Length: 152
Image 1 (cartoon, helix red, strand yellow):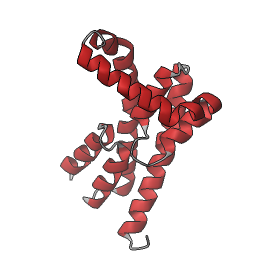
Image 2 (cartoon, one colour):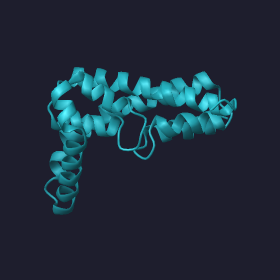
Image 3 (tube, one colour):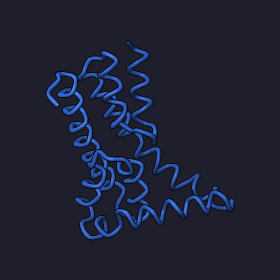
Image 4 (cartoon, helix red, strand yellow):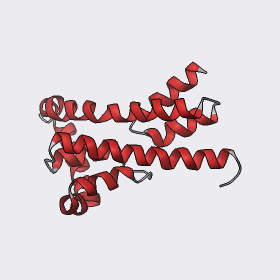
């Protein structure tokens, strides 16, 4: 049981799923639905400060390497094209809504990169990401719960 909750939390900090995968995994493995929600949500929130640390410090050193720089520029262009106009136009609310969408390609990783690229104030970006993660987690949690009860 503890192992399954830890795996769910790892999914929640992973860029390959975030809480969109961690919550259903933990619930379907028989974990307490409230505990799974809370821990996966908190694990997903932890990604934002980790990403900012990475982007502010480590990223600067890695940009010296051609392959990393090429990949980083590709990610930056993709982030600007997919979400740039909405986040620029709506700021906090655009970032929050972008992170809130429980679909692939959105979430706290993309939200952190977008807030870094568009130079959104860190505290506002943190709140926008956290609120977006919360609503995304609630949507995933409710849909998983309904599916488990055979209602969806």
